[in-house]
Length: 400
Image (cartoon, rainbow, N blue to C red):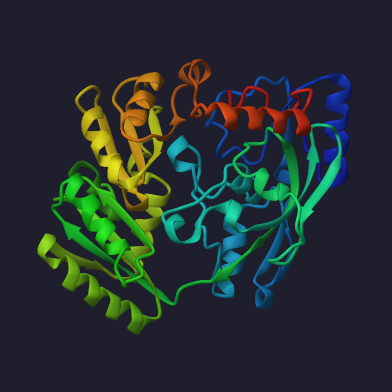
């Protein structure tokens, strides 16, 4: 296998044009933090974008940042922190869950995987914050989309179209994101001892209140002891995060106490504890156990997710916890996954999506890792692939 390591957009274009002329498929690699997600790419050659690094524009007063695709997110976040700013979409770091070092994810990978975190309910995902990209299509054509301002002229927003495409449509070389001021402080309101069903109702009540909750999660008893270095060990923990100015956070904590105190014992996590626990939830650290035991990422309606889990546990050994007010379910399975059965169960409870995030190589190769799309969406995805990469040069087989 030959791995090309371009150091500029022009060299990236040359590599893709060579691959097209030779009909030689390419695996697109950043720092490899998410390489274990999806089916193994069916390619003899690779293009390593880790040499495309560096922040090329940062205007804190304009809330705009541009960087090359291989720039580590950790480096960008450190720069933003100096100016009390952040990526509001809170990109997840898949590294520890997949047995890699933390902090290796790149800004290009954030868009390719459409990353988000616990704040997605309030702030969306990477696609909602990207302003523009420079990229090379599978046709061997360099193109750009968007710009460096929040409002652009009307037309096709290709930058958002590339979000979640896992490198199968184009090789992104440069990106521009909007950034936002970071909250002055945060605290987390915790209710102890709720079962999954009551926890779903409590999270819905908190999110629907005037307390402006930015994140909501539920950790059952067998998971809660794996966060905060065991600091929440014991009964189940239902967590609601509040962010903002100090007096506002305290006022909203009082609001939640008045609303939810009858539900169970209340605890409050201070700023340091709050930041730590939401990082651990974001990165699925309760299941970062150094194994390849199957882990599924399931997205459903919050009112139905816990019901699906109750039924799932009647048929399979599953260790789960909930984010996004119960709409995101992380499930570690005791046995190899049966994708069709799980997805049928999800459909029975109103529909959703299930992605096999972690599994052994043979299981990944033989499974439909990404959730099958409905007929119209599948047809649209195929047309996009035909337009951007008609010869199937980029990451072939990765998504199916």
